[in-house]
Image (cartoon, rainbow, N blue to C red; front, side, top):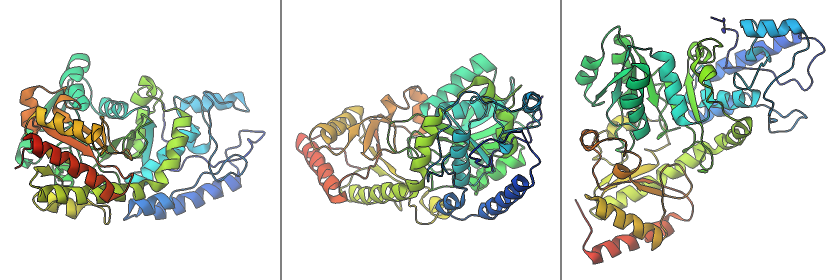
Length: 457
């Protein structure tokens, strides 16, 4: 196996404007600059707020001094001396020293976004992928081998559930035990020492908004010798799983982090040793399966991350206000910011200060018929939002989870996960004024009352 230790992802590359005439790796100015970067980045690592961590991350300038970094759209990279190629392929030289082979391996623009994501999640390293599912599948295939085992939450995204319950057993001989993630004894008993390699759950579950006790689950996982992987797609900025004890964080960047419903992307954030192993030329899941992010996509995303904190605060603020008002109307609303949510105090204790309780809420309308009637009114009569899957968009997005994003699960699995037939998941947007949007919601509810279809708790 190639030694990829030198190919660190935390502080990759100094952005030189012109390549030197020789592949000089011992230049004193270079070494001094690297030490300076390491010191400033290490100081920033002791962070308390993800926005502060992002602001402390190294800013990458453009090739000609532009305030935005340049897009490195090349698929392949040249060297000045033939011996350098051998050193790169043997792992002696890598991206941390500004040596690149091929963009399926490392790309400077994608690395810049990866560095931002590592800062956001407080991890040593990160690497971005072409989708959230590619991030999830790649990290699990790196950590779990044929004949080994995963323990996972019952309530996860439908695609993740299908990957673990159908694809992995068939194609990889990897099995999964699904558990109630709030039942610590059940979690502990499901982990088979020596066989179980990963404990996997979502920080805030899709779609039921169950909040995982990340510190306690991490403690149990580590006691049993497993790697704790958390999907933080629903709660960027709100939760910092690694700070709370987890080992690895994955995201579908397509959601809140992108914010535009126009990009498909994912990321794995974790120890440098893990991320580098995933990029290993011989056995790396990212390197060999090739879920490569396009450099132009990485550039677009890197321009959006600086205002993620502002967007999340508004998503969360509006979700909180709407949830409180919906509850007063007598609707069956699920939102972690409400006092009656089972994990309200837990999230209050774990969450990053001032970011709220998440940008999603759920309304349980009891039946799919009532759920569909409400969504139809909200979209086609009052223009409150759109019937669409996904989340994190500036418009409110609504879907009936049981028949859409969780449809990969059978009825028994949905019942165990707490997904009722009439559960409407709402990703609350921020376009328009809050009162304007609330009046649109009220009008739809009035129409439901008039038709006699309103199901109150």
